[in-house]
Image 1 (cartoon, rainbow, N blue to C red):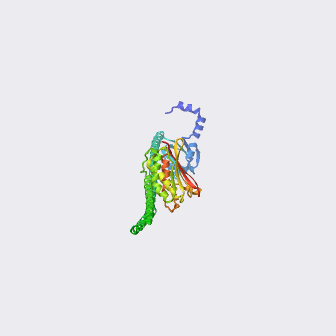
Image 2: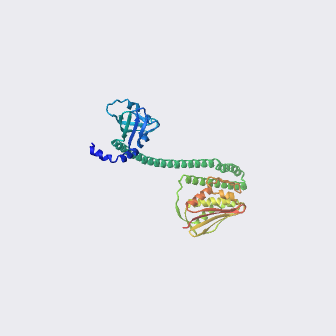
Image 3: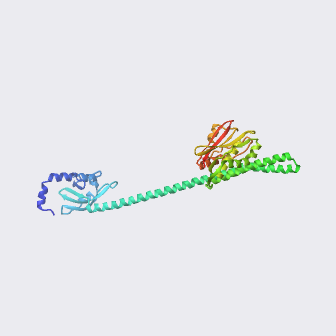
Length: 385
């Protein structure tokens, strides 16, 4: 409790205290007349007023304060709500005094209440931070799940495309050579009965040609299907090119002979590090293509050249060649540019896609040099053994 000497001491600072109270942001002071006119308010109290000052006294209202007939000057002591019902309001711990026809409102924030609010805000901020961290974790998990779903969806789309491609080939491309074999077999039955040796040899040759086409198609189809599903094993080993060339020669000599094409493999002592099945598939498809698009009486050459750290293998022909537009589309996935050969040979477009995929599996590159009417050169590289 203040004594008389304290009041004398404070009286020396009347002007300073008055200025401080006027600009204060925590202590609220206002003076009203009994008819509701605001006679004075300091900075803190003014900030609370919304519209007409007496209407900003929400609980108790100005009318309720006037209705108090206490004999003491202190007519109210408690929480006073100030502001606006439709926007922002706040409660202060206030005392309301009446002297004559004037009301003095003095109040401010309760320190204990403020500390409690601060503690509540601290807990709330901590909970918000924990929630944010959890949301970040959940977002990461959801993103991971979404990526996995997208990947699975892409694989499913790819598998469906593979299935559709396989069914399309079975329905169309396999049907033609098999129908040919069946038709020729029926003719062959009658020819044998008639002992027509000339026609017999021709029909057997056609059966061989159709069977070879069907076999080639089935091999490509199975390899391509396994490759698309990731089921194709990659087992590189040291291989002799000369030995591989001899195996291929035996297999394709008859096909070349039927079109009177000279098929030559230049002898090579070189070796490569490659998967046997994949390299055989590459050579088989490129040689078949060369024979397919070479006219009767033409030639196909297969040879190898040793470069710095790799082997370059070339399949060259003097066939019909191709224009620039065809060359640019040749190895693009999804573009089926297969067309009939010079002897009406069919194809699926899978062969060159397999060649590109298998060459790149070895870390090599495949390219083509071709001019319309002058032939083509397919060139690919493999690691040197």
